[in-house]
Image (tube, rainbow, N blue to C red; front, side):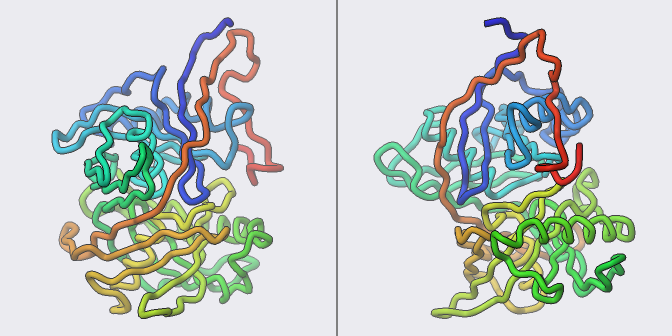
Length: 343
């Protein structure tokens, strides 16, 4: 087989969201930090386009490049690539990466529990994997510090009207919007409507609000809109459904660990949740992340929380992607029929 490149990937999903893990064929990018490596990958952007765009990928895929950790406290690092972006941190992807590293033997698995630290561009995350008979049955990720940036903001969106929203950081910046207020339900059959309206709202918010992380100024701008459902309480535990819109136009199949972290950060800022409280976050397809506020945190001159995200991941297969020298689409392609817009 003729091939200019061969890239080895282990496929996985966490509670429905695809998070593929690159384990071979790619050298670590230049940079003294994972943020610098992330910036180099984004500027070049070949690897993301090659794997995520068709014919090798699709708008539903995310990829994680495993790299040596820069921080000596961590056993490995990973850089997240999504259809249009490089998020600093991702809950579902962290669960996929931890599962792949342990189940393939890249890191040693210990039963019944394996503890490790992974490094992301957004910071260190602690991993607790519950393991049995060679597999990860559940992974709990202690996220980077998260906080509510601003509550009860408003923006006028043409054709939609005035939208009330919160901005919170959960590993990226999220705009949190109540779905029912806009006549939307978080159901699979409404996924396209959630995407179309969510992308329009995000564009309007980004045009009016410049958001910068108080510690890492490389992390900025609202990246996602998360639609929020009704919060109910059962057995003393609050539960709610959400749907995070990932550009250029798809709904996170999982409950979105970073989006859920942003959500409970806003709830904590309103006094609705406190340290030690659990929140069950459910996805559009009914899967669940168990969220917990582990402790309070200081972020720059402000305050926030450190949440944990607990869920399950499953390996779906192994893939070796090739680039034939004669392939007329070396960086792939996207079509608006499935991508919402061409990117």
